[in-house]
Image 1 (cartoon, rainbow, N blue to C red):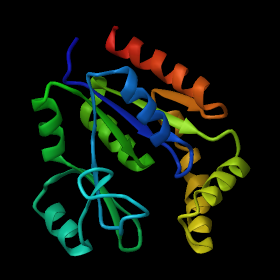
Image 2 (image 1 turned 60 degrees about the vertical axis):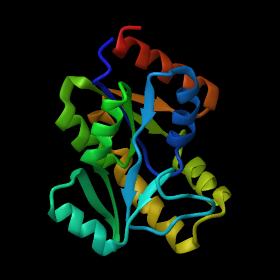
Image 3 (image 1 turned 120 degrees about the vertical axis):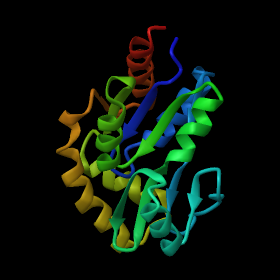
Amino acid sequence: MDNRKAILFSAPSGCGKTTIIKQLLTYFDCFEFSISATSRQPRGDEKHGIEYYFLSNDEFKQRAAKDEFLEWEEVYQGTCYGTLKSEIDRIWDNGHVIIFDVDVNGGKNIKKYFGDKALSIFVMPPSIEVLEQRLRSRGTDSEESIQKRLGRSAKELEEAPYFDRTIVNNDLQTAVEETKQAICNFLGI
């Protein structure tokens, strides 16, 4: 198997992509999660170098100006997310397949960069109402933040056809199994 491949997951916030990825990491020992960089503050127990590389907005922009990102975007005013090129090198040097958990635009850009070496998966909620319920149940976002995320989600859902596979996360175990099969087919295992 050629380990210099990538699998990327995109979805509106609250669709369960991170939960699906965490379960898949227990099945595939050749996978390593790509840690994204962000200029937002940590939520809850999040730690630098584990969930994200937390950078100040200034540091993020300086590193972007130095072309250190494969892709990046200012998702919300003053809040950037991106993939450091050094993260790709780190994972491939370990002999692993890269797993990306990125926003929709990041997913499209990464797929464009990797081409056939990447499988792009869009995780979709069963409905916008379920998505809103999931965002509220997190208990980590303000009402304003939830409304912003829902507005952005409606636009992101329209991007699903640009991905190789769409997985509807209505039942977590079913979504994990469908995703696992798509990955096995992609990797030829």
